[in-house]
Length: 487
Image (cartoon, rainbow, N blue to C red):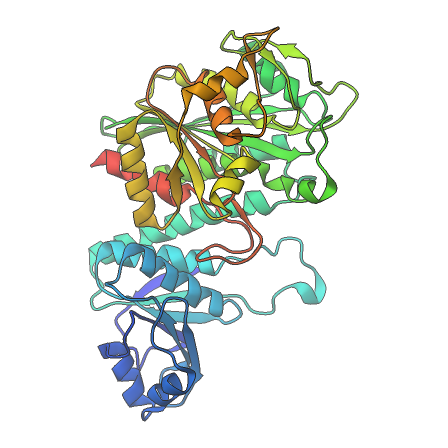
């Protein structure tokens, strides 16, 4: 999709669809201009349909007298334009125009942050996963051009729109990975994708195969992979800003289970259906690193991914098995369907040795977190209050929902084993917390945060800027966090 700035008036802008955001009132100059050009038809329709600009309301009209073929009013609720509301406007407008050629969206203001959000939202709303469609299932028309109507085409707004495109494309890359079927997106394919993206941007990327992982000393990752005919992969991406000293060093770790059947503790069929999404943490990690490189952020960023399947082959690991870890601690296996924390344990032990200012993982880790927080909010676990406050603040600005959950040390008792240093899982109560406590044992003493994105990484239907399926959740917040460190 091509995104460009336009200084056309809302009445003359040529497009298949013109979208205008309405913040709880039809008294805005843009709406008045459309109403006048349509001989009060817009106002009459709004009254008939009881459209008042409330959050979630939309009003669509076909009318003569305008440059655009149709007009869409998007209700954004009371209040002033914000990054989150601008992104929502862009997403709703582009989603409504996905089968058209061109959409024009009136920017709520000429604020650079708002224009950036509008551009990224339009890319997110225009997203469709059509790779495997054939014949008459292939869309006849797709959205090709997005015009952002602004007051002036300034260099600052051009840069803002370009940054919004980078963010939108980075999220959409993550969505593509999550939506890809597991027979195609194997651990090797996931690693190859990361390597190809890095090569295109000049970002160093190391990929280890099974023998390489053995040399790295990652027994837990290898244990999980034993039941699959697909070899595991371990990935390390490194973005370093050019020409400037990095203002911070951040390591992101992503869980990369390209398919999770549950191992010998097999999942029921309904629960297994969407387990291609169990690599969403890896997809988010790739998206963040690629966006940081394209935006040339003054922060050193590492992306670490442990990729494997969790299957039921003849050599699959078993409940009751005990394995060492890269960290040195021995781990008793309790439930083979709690495999993600094992992969992350070895990855975190590797990542902590990089000496970062902050170590952060994204993982579709527990159903317990979804039970606690629902499908649209991620769990945030950390002992670092300053890190939590900063991350929650930028997440709110980006419109991604997190909630800080406790790391209750009392619950660590449930992870004590009679035959090893640790059990890797406890009973169902406080399951998201005990999982986070297990990971904390391998992350070292530095600033560490675990993000359980099991709910919002994959949606059963459209929600906000997110489509059905993979959402790319976490990329926007991760990038904004890096920007906050860069000053």
